[in-house]
Image: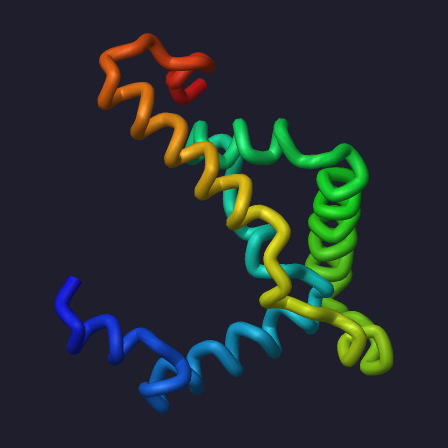
Length: 122
């Protein structure tokens, strides 16, 4: 990607990207979600593998956030304001493990090895 597009997508350099990040943060806080909760393990096998490698407590907290968000959405409600202020929507818990899984997959493909886990979409 060219440096122009990188600077255009960087919230520190582009007012449009900062505006989008602020809007997204508000919507995630309304339901008590984090940005990493939006990744779908059925869409990308690497995400599924990264979630399998995370500690059980982190995955359980993710599932609880998703259940709470679905419940609030079905009731057409938002989290109370005091809980919304406590949320950290851009604190990542999945990116480091996902980068490691993608790096391992790239290394295995470069060496011509078979995949370590089944790479089919159900």
